[in-house]
Every structure is written in C-alpha cells, then in structure tokens.
Image 1: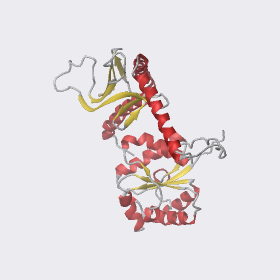
Image 2: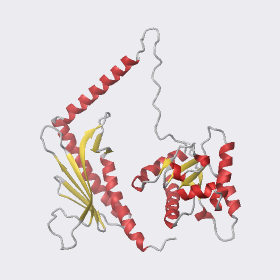
Image 3: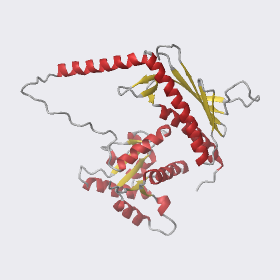
Image 4: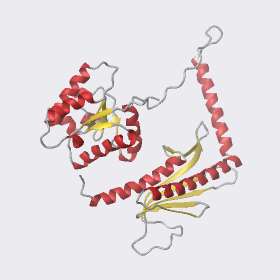
Length: 341
C-alpha cells in the first residue's frame, strides 16, 4: 500500500505559556503517533532567522494548515497584528484563490466560541473541536484522519438498484419495514440479555475486563519507568494504582436469569485503594474524585456496551480510560516541578 506522508503548518497566537505548550504537545503527538511532518515556529525559528520568509515558505510547503483558534487569534488576525496578522493575510488570499473542492485549511477551535475565536475569512469553514482535554485522544485521532484526507465516518456500500417495474416504492412501507426490523433486533437482544446466556456473557466480559487490567498493568510496568499495581479478589473487584492514584472496578449481578440491573461501578481515586478498605492511616484516606455506574447492554451488532447516561464504552475503552486518568494525573502533578522548555 502506498503511504504518503503529510506536512502541516500550524498557525496560532502566542496567547500564554500554557497555550504554547499545548500547541507544542499537539505537534509532537502528530509527528510521533501519526507520522505527520509538522512545521512549527517553536521547532524552526531561532535568533537571526527571517520570520516573513519562514511563514511564506511554510505555507507553500504544507499540505494542510492547522489554524488554532482562540479569541486572541481572532483579534490579531482581523487587526493584522504581529506574525498572526501576516499569516492570515496570506491564508485568506490562498483560501480565496483555492478551488472550492480543495481542503487545505483546518480550523481547530481551542478556546472560546466560533463567534469569539474565528476570523471573518474562516466563518464558512467547518471546525474541529479540541477544547475539551478529556476528549483529546479521540479528537487527535480524528484530526489525523482529516490531515490524511480520510473520512471520519465511512460511507456505506451502495445497495442494489431496484426493479422499478415490479417493485412499488413507498416511503411509508420503507419506514414500516425499518421500524419492524429494528423492533425485531431489540427483541432479539433483550431476549439474550434476559436469559442465562446473557448472564454468561456478562461474566465472560467482566473476566475479560479483569484480564485486560492485569495485562495492561504488566505491559506499562515493563515498558515505562512507572510501576502499576494490579490487585483483584477474582470475584467482583479489581483495582489498578500507580504513584498515589487508583481506579477501582466493582461489578454486580442482581438476578440469576437476567442481566437487568447488572452493573460496573468505576471510581477514580486520589490515593491508593486496597481490597480491604478499612486499613488507612488517619489523614491518608483515599479520596474519591469520580464515580460512574455503567449498565450492561449490547448494540445491534451484539457487541458489548457499558452505558452511563449518554456515555457508551466498550470494555477496552473502560480499561483505557482508567489508565489515562492515572497517567494524566501523574503528569499534571509532576509537571508542577518541571522547568519546561
């Protein structure tokens, strides 16, 4: 398969050190995780280099231009202030001259609303949302697909061309058939969940959860400087922890012949949790930061889902989210003592 690297230039304003660091980390992630060559002033510019030449040549080289939108970016762009002002004059001209089918500029809404952060020349563009850091990993993956011109949602295959001479096309019939099919699927899934088979599937899935927690703990301990601890009573509770942060999983079945009310309770903790939770030194008790109760369900493809309000995760995502919470918490705590770049 022919794989062609993409080159991107990032246009942003130096709002504050935190924003500069976020842009820098975004650049590193695109390069290291997705093989994208990033042109960034923080990499390229040093004393004595020509800023105007850098911006002109960068826009020319880039396959895509990521425009990181903040309220301050809009002010500088529309008032033609500093480097942002010069960049946007070139960007707006290139947008005007580009064919409508060419997608070179990807606006990324980092802070503020579209009205607060988008310059006038980008008003008609769709925006990629990256304001919620809790969804950073997913948004980063989506951004990489946009850069490589891959659709975020795959188009379905075309169906057969109908025989217009023998088939009567009627939207009422089509809707009635679709509703009937969906009702049949729902009934089929409900019959599985309300059975001994559903109980078996639930137990197998919690066993898979347990195994994934153990395997990931060993993987990260063997391949990083962090030591993840995994404990389980092999019945209904598992805990992972590292450097003062923990995530506990507790699952329960209420009935023996249906998964109705079958749940997993996931809790994020500041502190180290033990299976026997009564033994803590005074003042060092762990603090629960987040508690989520997930119900057991399936989608129409009969894949396992854990549901909490509008949130839906498969088992691997529950495991990933737990380790992400721990590593992000450790990073946030340790970065307070870092000198930075």
